[in-house]
Image (tube, rainbow, N blue to C red):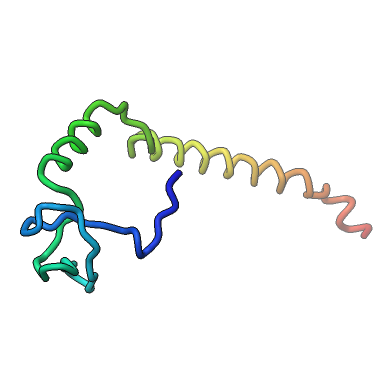
Length: 99
């Protein structure tokens, strides 16, 4: 893996038509060489990047409906577990009076 650092970082300048060092502000970044606003990718590289994303299989989080039903099942299981724990610790009435 490449080691990225501040001095090697580059963005695309449309005026220079090249990847150049840049000055970053909060909302925009500017070319060090000509002062024009820079972008992350050139148009060709952006299209290549987008096409590459389309070929990847989608992975990640499950759909919300699956997560919701799982949460409901987990809540019911937790409730059932609480009732079994509370019945295990209850003492019969005759033992409570003698204690």
